[in-house]
Amino acid sequence: MLQTVRIWDAPTRLFHWALVVCVIALVVTANVGGAAMTWHFQLGYCVLSLLLFRLVWGFLGGHWSRFVHFVRGPRTVWRYLKGRAEATAGVGHNPMGALSVLAMLAFLLLQVSTGLMSDDEISAAGPLTRYAPGEWISLATFYHKNIGKYILLALVFTHLFAIGFYFFRRDENLVKPMVTGDKQLELAVPASMDGMRQHLLALVVLGLCGGAVAAAVAWLEA
Image (cartoon, rainbow, N blue to C red; front, top):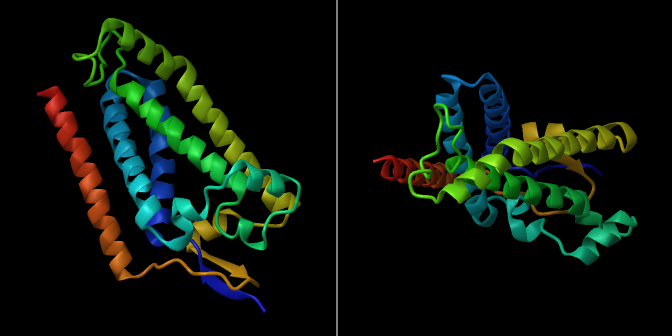
């Protein structure tokens, strides 16, 4: 018998869609340039705050949002690829999806970090440029503009391809649970906590992460 199980808690879902909006806006503002670069930097700070939140939430969030419940070793990934994974492997992030999530988080952090040290030598310079050696600034700028963004675009398109593959070939909608939070499952699996207490905790964590980023940027620009 199918039962409705809360897989993705509200903070995880809001993080996901907020990150989507910010990344799209970052691409747009980067291509527009000029005065839009002010927004580009502000959006970059928002992404950094969101990423810090997700790292913390990977330890405090709902059951299936915690790293311990979806990060798997090479043996588990190999078994999944050979079709011999555990029955619960696809409840939250499957082993391949977990690798995609970790790659996205890592390269977004790297992109934001190099953005803080980038200088277009026209009107936009990151807050770390006044403290970093010229060689570092050149390397960070080159990576940010010519390498990092294409790696992220490749990860995004891979993510979209995977969504399409699971929808059309495996009849599994990966988007709906990230909207509603729920999955229809035959398995008896733990549900993610998603009550008011979790929501308040998430607000505190996000506030602390955003405050830390704002304070750091203000200190660097002082």
